[in-house]
Amino acid sequence: MLHNLSRREFLMFSGLLALDRDKRKQISAEIQKQDSVSFEEALADVSLRQKYIDELVTENSSPYVEEVIYDNDKSKAFELAVKMSIAEASLDYHIMHHDNKNIKPYDKVIILHGLMRRMDNMPEVVNEAKKNASPEDFGLNEAAMGTLNFSDGYGLGFKSKMYVFNDSFTEWEIETPEFPIKIQPSEEIFKMHLSHEYKHAANGYKGLTINDNLVVSHSDYQNISDEIAHFVEEGSAYLSGIEFSRQFGKNNSAYLLAVDMFDVFMTNEIAKLDMLKINTYEKELMAHYKLEFNKLTDEIKMVRIMLGQGI
Ligand SMILES: [Zn+2]
Image (cartoon, rainbow, N blue to C red; front, side):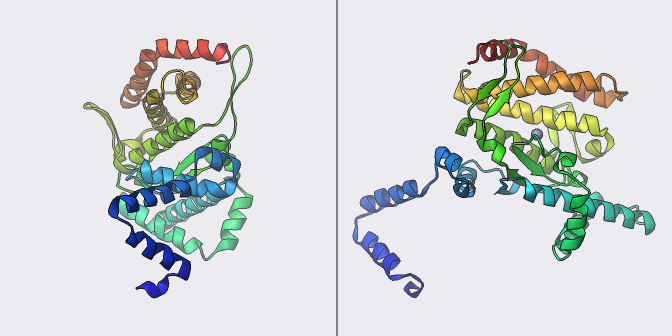
């Protein structure tokens, strides 16, 4: 077995064996610590970010996430999103022309994954499609992180791919009525965003159970309008970010940012959705998040005051 090790590694290895157990433990803990990347190091050096993410994700893992990829300029997420939409379009075309309408949703996603793999050998097709699309089409422009999965597979046990963008390591700007506020990136903010994305991945895998009487299953998700689906998904993820960030304290910028983002999101969405014709079930979903929003009124007021003072 030892022939695979270089001479230096072998010496270190045998040296460690010569030590007693406690000393060995202490040394290996120190080696690991030295080896690990801090948020500040990842902030300063782009080349360390994937390693930072790998370590963080090992400590705070989600069973619903396939992998978390650092994607500095969003090009990887954009390419995957383009491939996913080509796969969806070609499957839709196939279903339309081959009278395959009874194909089961689960099988549909398996076929979509197969089409994605095939696309790896067709870079021209993907590059051509990329020319006719932009990251904005997939909501990537404003995102700090992104979770990608097929909506056809919602709630059917498929894991998501997650991307972390450069925006997770840059200053945040919050508009207030008086002046814009700058918030510096931090590990707490990073983890808050991660918990937001983990919620999307969990929903994508199991569907969303809001309470005993209100769930969004695979078929519910297919039947609600895109606007309500977006509202429910983001609403639940923003709430998850707030819940998670409370552990850091209400003075922490992660908490302030989480509450502010939910506030801005809900204010915009409610204004938009109030114009929409929605059915009883969609009304129930909307009412739930409006209620959660109202429950947070006092907290939101506090956060607005703190942000108004420039924190
Ligand atoms: Zn989201």
